[in-house]
Image (tube, rainbow over all chains, first blue to last red; front, top):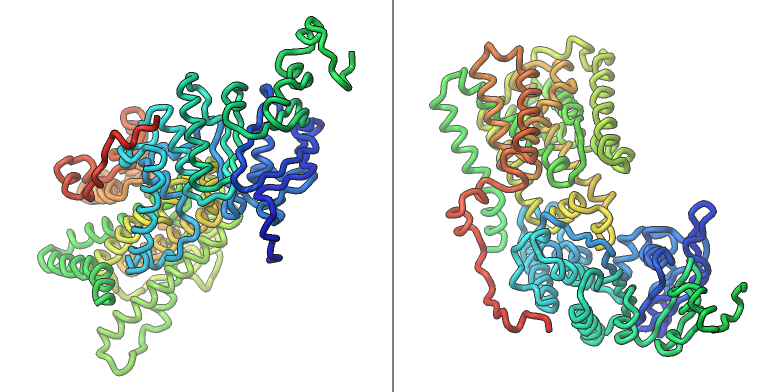
Length: 274
Length: 337
C-alpha cells in the first residue's frame, strides 16, 4: 500500500466516464470531496446522478477516468471492497434486508473488520461471543442515532416508509464510512419531513465528520442543506459551485425548465445552439 | 475456566445427543432403529442443504452428488483400514476411531467437491445455478458408475456395518448445531443478507461471492457426512442411491419445512422419512408423494410449513423465555425532530 497523503481528499473522481454501448451515461465527471463537506447532486431524471453513484461505489466499472478514495485508486474494485475502503451508500429504491430485523440490518453492515472466523462461530468461543456483543452494541448505537431503537426487533419490511429510509442510513453509517452517498434519501416525503431529514443529515455530518454526497430532486431542500452543488444533465456536469450561483446559472434553468422557458424570458445561454 | 465454557457450549449438546441416542437404541427394536437412522441421515441432509437454499437463497438441487463423494471416500477408507488396529486399542474402539476418521475424510472430500462445483457455478443465479448443480450431481454419479476402482455400476458391497443410531444422532445434532450457530453469527447474517438483497449486501461490505462459496462448501461437507453414515448403514455403496432423485427428495424436505427454518427442515425430514418407512407399501409411490406434496404446498403454503421462522417462533410462550432482555428505551428522545 502506498501511503496516501494525509490531506488526500476523501473522494477524487477525475474524468470519470461510464458508457453503455453508444450512450454516455456519464461523461468526464469530476468531483473532489474533503472530509466534512456536504455536497448536493441535482439534475433532471436520467441525468446520470445514480450512474455517478454507481461508478463511485463500484457497481459499474468506469469506462474511462479514475476514482480515488482517500488517495487510493478504486477503479474496477468490487462494491464490497470499495465499501471497506470507506464509501457507503443508500439506494434510490429502498434496498433493506426485508426479512431481517432492524437490528440485524445494521449488524450486517458492522460485519467487516470482524476477527472471529467460521470455526469460532461454530464453537461459540469466547472471542466470538465478545465480537458479537461488540457488534450488537455498535449496531444499537447507530439505531439510536437514527431514532430507531424502539424498532430494534421489528422486521425491516414492517417499518413505515420514513423509518425504512432512516434505517438505510443507519445501515450505511454502520459500515464506518468516510464518504456517505445518499441516493434521494427524501424521496416520497412531504416538505416538512424533507427539511427534518436534511437537518438530520447535516447533524450526522457534524457528529461523524463525514463527507456526504446527496442526490435530491427538490431544489429548495438541497439548496438549503448543502454547501456546494453539482448539476448533471445528460451525463454532463453543467454547473457546480455555491447554491446561489448554481440557481442563477442559465444552463441549470434550461435543463430544468426547457429552452422554451429561456426563450420566453429572453435569457441567453452561453454555448447553447439556438 | 474459559476452556471449560468453550467445551460446555460445544460438546454438551453432542454428549446429550449421544446418550439419548444410545438409550433409544437400547429400547428400540431393529426395525425402528433402522427407520430412525434413515430419518437422522435425512435430517443431516435437509439441514445442510438449508444452509445453501434457505439461508443463502441460492438454489442447489445436486446435494446427492456431494453425498456420493463423502460416501465413497469413507467407504474406501473403511475397506483399506478394515484390519488395522490403532495403538494396541481393543478392536472395537479402534474400529470406531477409524470410522470417525473415515467420516471426517468423507466430509473433507465432499467439501473439496463443493469448492470445485461452487467456484464456477455460484456466479450464476436462480434457475441456472439449479441446472449446474443438477448437472454436477449427474456427472459425479456417471463418473462413479464408470470407474472400476469405485465398483462401477454395481457399487461397492461388503462394507462392515459401522453406523449406529448413536453415530447418526451425533451427526444430526452436530449438523443442527452448525446451522443454528451459523445463522446466529455474523457470518450467518451475511448469508441472510445475500438472500435478501445481493446488491445491498455487496454495498454493505459483504464479499458475496466468497460467502456463497463458503456456504456451499459447508453444506457439501455435511452432505458428505450423511453419505458416509448411509453407506455404513446399508453396508453397500450403490451409485443409484446418489442420483438426482435423492437430491430431489432432500429439496422436498427443505421446501416442505420452510426455506431458512432449521427446525422446519428437521421436522420435515423426520416426518417424510418415518411416514414413508412405516407405510412401506407406499415406498414405490414416494416420488408421486413428493411431487403431490410440493404441489399442494405451493398452492396452500408457498413458504413451507414454517417459512423462515423456527419452531419456537410459533409458540409465543417459548419465545418470551428465549428473548433477550430489552434495553430500556425512552420513546421521547428517539423521535427525530
